[in-house]
Amino acid sequence: MEPQVVNRPEKSRYEILAGDDGTETAGFAEYHLSAGEIAFIHTETDPRFAGRGLGGLLARGALDDARARGLHVLPYCPFIRGWIGKHPEYADLVPEARRAHFGL
Image (tube, rainbow, N blue to C red; front, side, top):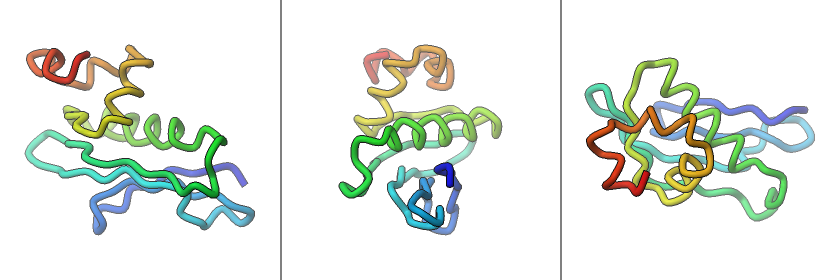
């Protein structure tokens, strides 16, 4: 099955599901949600799934959802911040006044 990114608001995180049956949590991106903003604070991928590009799929899925929800992104997590740096088409999600703070 294709990996799938799902929002788990009860856990304040996005998860990427993978594995043979598509139900194993292969990684997650924790966030803090407040008025109109989503702050990404930690991203982790299970070492068993390393090298498959799942971290990038997770970042893209979470950021696409933030865009669809009209949320500003605060990338405190180094992985999310680095991913945005490599994909400048997502930099507009970070408020312009805060981009320098995040090195974007």
